[in-house]
Length: 79
Image 1 (cartoon, rainbow, N blue to C red):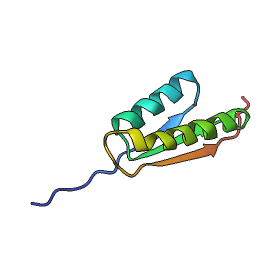
Image 2 (tube, one colour):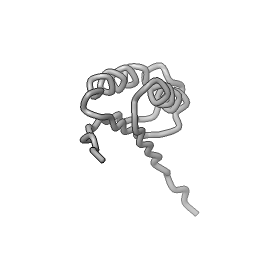
Image 3 (tube, one colour):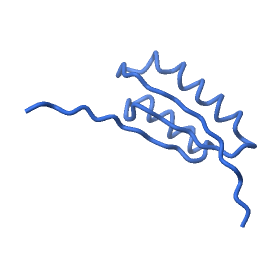
């Protein structure tokens, strides 16, 4: 029997105070190997800054896993 490797991905919608804290906890605890942050265009620069901060913190997390941090924008929906 061979062991299968699981690649865990998390998509974070909204990078406010709670979202950025959640992203930090995910990276700090090594829960996900890939983290995507989706944010509206008005707050895109904050999401990019948070992603850069998280990528710099990877060197100090205990599980040394390869982690990708991605940022994407979404259009604001008008109802």
